[in-house]
Image (cartoon, rainbow, N blue to C red; front, top):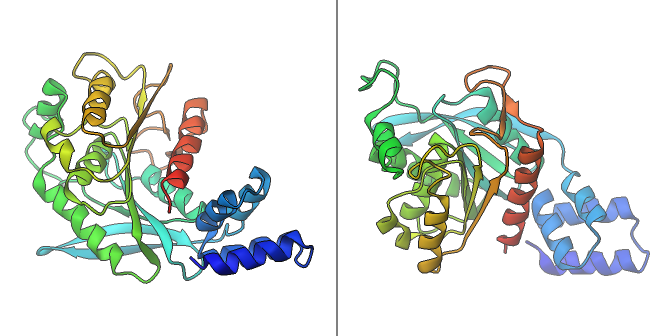
Length: 302
């Protein structure tokens, strides 16, 4: 980020030498993107309305299907980013158990419209895999019974390789690569933080926690968001949230968490999980969670 240039532009704007529109455009260009521009304007004390204008400046986004290598496999993914060269802060969007759905892609576009590059890889096991009860893989049955997410290593390897692939891209701010996941993906976002020491942040939407003995390896600040109605037992996702918070605090790990009253499991999604029209919800808990998530990212951006 060209902090010195932004400071010069700011002084010109305050002296009336730049109009508001030109100032915002030049700051976005100098900062390297809309999100970074909003962050630096906030640090400089500008009013929220001007910051929102800066973050809305780059509404044009680019989407594409991409792939990256992982061992002897190729991982397919959906990429969304602002138009422009960047580098952009980046989020790995980890889908639900339904796979790379319309909802996961809509989340990626939400990040792109907010100044991020977002990569949503397809991680679901290949069709036809034997499931012990016809519906759930063994890891899920174990998680339901214990509340502990022991994610299969091959899936985490794909995420680690995705992180490596992103860090080599010129349009990625390699110092700010984070993850966000939903349920199945939330567990993987949390677990990724235990394995990638340079992960910027991990956002967990109603995802199970890793084994507590693994939490000490986490460097990334974690934000966890839960629905109050997603709480059928002490080992449920929400039921274990307070226990997770106590464990993270005991380890002095940065952990923020919220439970939304009357919010069910999957509250950030509108429509059925595999529905081709599913998208990011506009309900009250979803809107509050979205604002909190971007506030969290802004506070952790430096």
